[in-house]
Image (cartoon, rainbow, N blue to C red; front, top):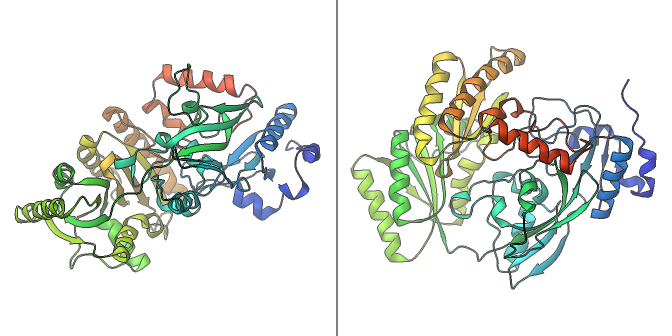
Length: 462
């Protein structure tokens, strides 16, 4: 029999409207974008303040109730799933901008602020928040921080970690910690802020963050290239990087482009299909620099390195080109799809991709594999589409076989089993391929310090 959750004891902390057991809410807030599990939360809580979050944690500790923090639920590692009657703590109603500082510049926000709303707020003040990805319209800052989200601008601006100057968290002990307080310089011992960034809600619930902003980039130019081989992709990257202030360097394959064309109706940027596509974006530095870049593209084309190239002519075309890359997750959703995001050193990307691609073709010839990724920072997304003749159970079982080979290769290459979606439930069996026994032991010890009752997002990561 399932444990009875004493929700009535929350009446001193939350209003009735902040507690839901509606079946639709349970399904929506008990999951993320992973489609490998079925959610089974007991209730959804919607706190509006840090004090209310603290009260929830203290209630959970006293009553031995497991909590699953929930942001925008756009992750792909099942880090936000409630499978065993846990209570979900949604930060959706903690969505206020609290303070803007034009001198720093920075902005203090609650954890439920949507990424795109923060970007728009920064723009309205003449500044720029550069962490960007396709889920910007639904992902939340707290979730981005909890997974150290990356995205399409990492090459120039880095991960979420680089932009967090302060954090407020409620630990599994029920303590409120104000970490770093937005300071630029602070050499007063351990910087606990960085423990909570990427912790996937297992150490504490992030309730507020101070986010650094920067000046907006100059005019951006988007270019799409058609290339014949992986080696050419990295050759172009090295050459372009020498003359252009790159903000992004993205790759996808002909299989990915075919999905965009057939499922979304997106036109190919070239007259004929290419084995590999590259989108790069750079910040324009002036006519002389533009001329250098055009000359380089022409020279590489004459040498056969680049098969075709098209430069965006306006902002509308910029967006159309970017959609070719950003909408690939949607384009591959017409069939059940097993997804993985991994990373290796940038210089190792071609060798790694060839190794894995050849393995899958040899051992799983009936699998259709779609590759794309942030190749300029070493992050690849592997998408395996379920064969139409195969049932889901068989498909997932065989994909676990791919996982074993994939993550063993990751270990051999010294890479990461998760580049930007966290470990969650999906990847916890494979953590040993990226982290040593000593590291995992240290991580578990930290978990015990900040969450001794084991109530925060249990079963994730370890």
